[in-house]
Length: 176
Image (cartoon, rainbow, N blue to C red; front, side, top):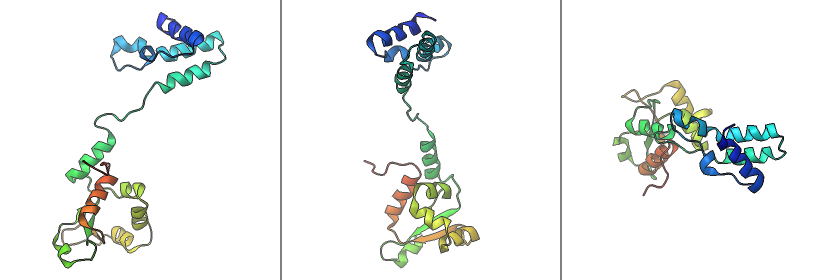
C-alpha cells in the first residue's frame, strides 16, 4: 500500500482518529484517483492486518462522505419544469376561494403538474386523486373544459393553492 493508506491506518490505531482531509473523496480527474480511495484502502489494509475494530474505522470513513444535493438536482429540475408548464400532467385546479365566489370562474385554472408527485407528497391529494371520489372519476374519465383541460374545483384561496402546488413540486414552503 502507499503511504497515504498506511498513515491513515496508523493514525487510527494510535490516536483513534480519522484525518478527514486525506480521506475525503475528491472530485478530481485521474491525478486524484489515488487519494480518492485512501479511506477504503486503509480499511482494507486494516482487515489484512487483522484489526478487531476495523468496523469502527469503516464507519468513521463512511461518515466522512457527505451526501448533499448537487446544483441542478432533480427537485430543482422538477420545480423548474413545473414553473415553465412543461410537466403536462393534464390536471388543473380551479380555486374557488373561501366563499366560492362566481368571479373565480374567470381566472385561469392552476396547473396541477404531475399527479404522481401530488399523490406521493400529500395525503390530501392522494385521497382526492386515488379513490372513488368525484375528482378521481373526473381525472380518469377525462371530463374536460373547453380548452381540453381536466379541471378540478377546489375551495381554497387561489394564492394559497398556488403556493401549495409549487411546494409539492419542490419549492421551499416559506420564501423570503
